Length: 190
Image 1 (tube, rainbow, N blue to C red):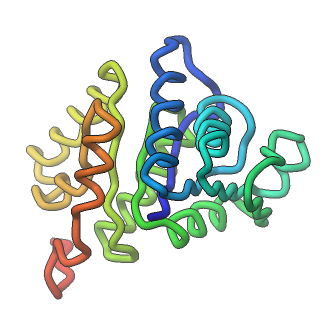
Image 2: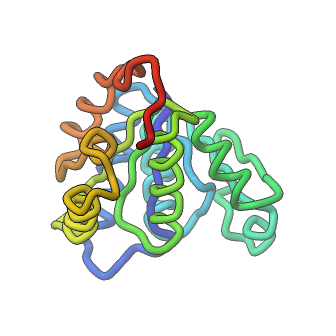
């Protein structure tokens, strides 16, 4: 199983964020899964990748050349792929993954998450998506998605595409069980 992890290029103020990143890297390795991530050696990204590598997981980093040349790429990755743009990076991360998980992060993490969620909604991919809600970090986002749903901008079934848990193993177990036939055979965006 290839797990795409979206997370911050910073570690955040609370040590719990870095602890969660280590737990994700360890859980991926212990399950015999592989990590697909943004290729950085800094912040939560670096923590997840180094932990996965140290515990025997295969790690594929996908990074735009303009970031790799700033020497923030993790050279120890099993495979490090340089691409031309952020858009290609995001598309390739999804393409190479079986499931997608977001840890705490900033604008880039939300960009990756919402692009993947939108693509899932319109069936450009069928991978399950999860939020690791460390210490309630994503509570405001979950509330906003519920508001979008209750105000009629997002269908219930689309709002339910994003699985939320504060427990790494529970989240991985849930995502691993989801089938690609969740929507049936037709595309209904209205």
